[in-house]
Image (cartoon, rainbow, N blue to C red; front, top):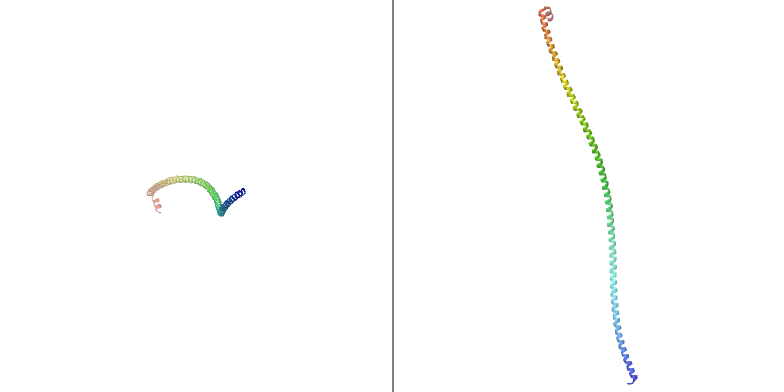
Length: 194
């Protein structure tokens, strides 16, 4: 074999090697393409999953926003109710304080009135006791006068009785004297008869 043939054979072998390598490269490229396609498909699936998750996340975000708005409205309503309750409590507390002041004032007025009534009662009591004392004094004076009048009346009755007795005795004496004189003088007797 000549040198030129050897070179041709060598070139053919190299060419065959290149073809083999090319086939392998082609196979590698197809494998690589398959891998890229698989990666792309996986990427597509991932993107779809991401998109689905994004949609779910957006839905969740909207739901959360809606719930947040509802919750904010409920919180606002609760705050308004709390504010109303606080205002109502303040009003009731003010009314209670006002009533307490009114009760305190009424109690002070009632205490003053009771003190006044007690004072008046003491004055009336003193006046009543004074009147009772005056009445007792008047009764004693009347009793004394009555006793004096009774004693005076008894004395007068005694004096009158004494006078009457004396008069009766005098009259009896006179009658005895008259009878005596009559017995002694007929003229007097006739005069007496006339």
